[in-house]
Image 1 (cartoon, one colour):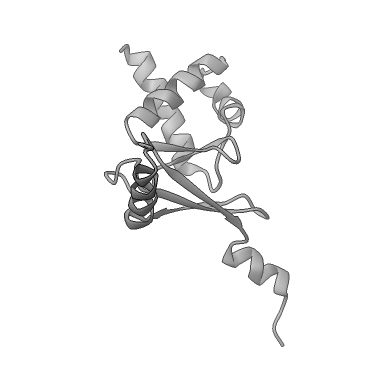
Image 2 (cartoon, rainbow, N blue to C red; image 1 turned 90 degrees about the vertical axis):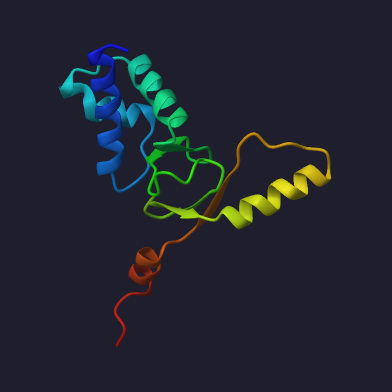
Length: 135
């Protein structure tokens, strides 16, 4: 891997770490164009590598990526709480929940290669904002 490739991967990773919400590949491309990344393929290669390394996660339901909030847990126990209002995504490490689903799959003859659970709803901040001032 060249120094430029490593630099590109680290730029993508840093952008995801700095973001308050998941970012699509094209969000990343827009954010990083001023830093010399001008091709979608460069972003996708970085995302693929970072996923394989377990440093980021893909949120399939919103077609976006987030930096791993709990490095070292592996990708086999991720649960995400995704807010429909503000778009934030919180990573919850729930190995028991994912293990239970894997066991159920195996009970039916299915072997899961990976698992990610995505909860859709409203975060605390957005619920509070919608409730308005308490008087």
